[in-house]
Length: 252
Image (cartoon, rainbow, N blue to C red; front, side, top):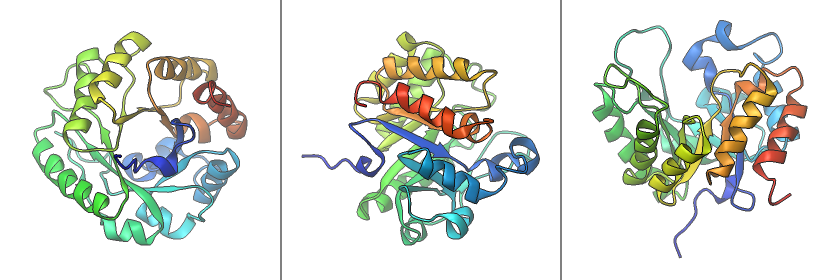
């Protein structure tokens, strides 16, 4: 029987991950306020909100991860300062992530970028090293660059999902295509790889975001990897409970 390396992050085959790698990606002035700029606050939201996992970059994990929920360490990253075709290079080893207590590792691939070959190659090595250690390898696959005209189209989103399968990912984190029918094609294209919707920027209303999550789950996805729509919320614990009611509707 094939090993499911995502099992530490699953409950009855579904999952709700709390992502907090935005500090490197966007800088503190874009996403954070006096409350959520403190990683210990987000760690508490992950635990008390009963998330199935938390996503940190290595520096945050070294200082703030406390073991209350499973850890997924992001191995690569970039800042928002450079312009041009995106590229995100590895800055943490699988070995170091494991030493921090990680049950999985994450890696971003900008599919369609002129630099995609670099990221595809690095993820190939990450996946092999992670699997050698029994860790899940999760691919953040975001089609981006001059060649990508619509990164939420059915064709592009399903391409991202399929790329995760072809690269050996245990799970993919991809954007929502906008409706359950088209997103179901992405789930089918992943052919057994766990599919998570990327939470993205703070939605205009909680109901608007929850409607997206409903479509994701209707399409057959595993769950969502959400950050700003929880820890930017005025009541992140209430939002976490609302998300759980949607993601685990059939099992709770």
